[in-house]
Image 1 (cartoon, one colour):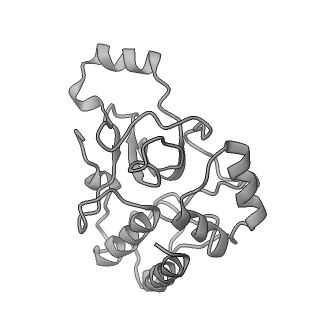
Image 2 (image 1 turned 90 degrees about the vertical axis):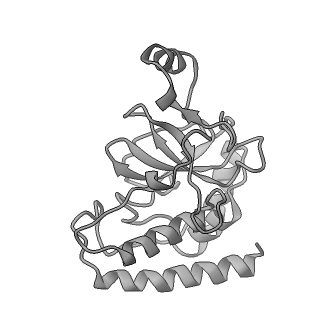
Image 3 (image 1 turned 60 degrees about the vertical axis):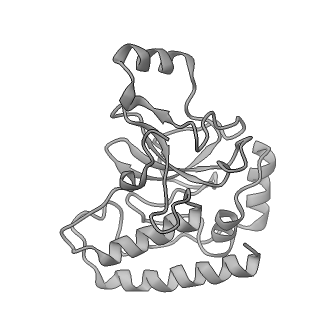
Length: 212
């Protein structure tokens, strides 16, 4: 996508978010309707990239430098990469090191024995190469892959649920059948929330491609 196309899509998504003010969900987790932090400066984005030896996915980078660095939604809120953020992080990834999984080879703990799971956690660092986008609660997170040698995996959003021995899986867009980008992820949240009754809720886990 070109910058112009990214900007147009961001504008469309943010226009949709205005409709959230008419909703009153019982399970919004963070403050609702969403409140957005001021965007990062270009200098802050460049410093983060240089410090970690990465380049942020363009749609995400454009959003955090032109619209908002973070916010109170989805769920417990869009995390900011800014070092000035006061939000407590639930995972602490090493962004400088490559993400160890690919779209074709996610981490599927559901097929492993307890002994195999213990062995994986003893030998493999799973908190590599991503930015935490949000925490849903109960050990479930959304991740944006920012450091991967696999070009198909870079820039995609994943479901992270190790607390419940589930695994780490890419989120698949139900419309395109492809792994979600940041803007896919954000727009899905808005559309799904607008469509739900106030006493209903969803999890991004419903989009996780279990088993690859």
